[in-house]
Amino acid sequence: MKSILIIGGARSGKSNFAQELALKSAQPVLFVATAEAGDEEMRQRIEEHQKVRPATWSTLEATTHVGSQVLKKIGKAQTVIVDCITLLINNIFNQYSDPSGEQIDAPLIEKEVMAEIGELVDCINQVNANFIIVTNEVGFGLVPANRMSRLYRDLLGRANQIMAQRADEIYLMVAGIPLPIKPAKAL
Image 1 (tube, one colour):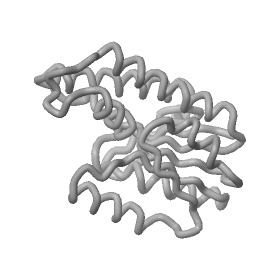
Image 2: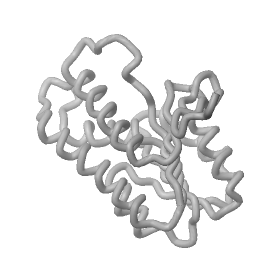
Image 3: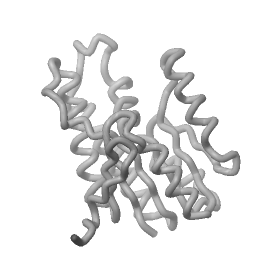
């Protein structure tokens, strides 16, 4: 079994590509949705994502503790899509900081993020299924203006590095085009 990391910017086609890969596998799929509907616009986005998923796929809504929840819910799934690490990390931030971002316990948030990613990697190593992990690349832009945003960027970057080390294949999505990163294609 293998793990595939799909990374790219917002609206780069990551989720669509992940679903295409899962469909090509022709295996039972467990779709792990990490999004929380914090407002009406996000609720509508979630509904749109739900509409395009095949009805035959199982869905697990898991805002944290993804690894342990997948272990409980895997069933007969041979492909697991985790969409996405970006929102998973955001969920942890929401649990351990105040809405203003002024009160932030950076060491605690870092500990929780690393535990979450470690749990997911352990799950990938234990489960006899292919994993397709979706995440955003947020390090291409400017240095964020506030402490909370910088910490988020840094921790997501570390989480992405850990997931990339575990991944057998990595694709960078640019304008809907998957660019293979790992293993690199021969010229």
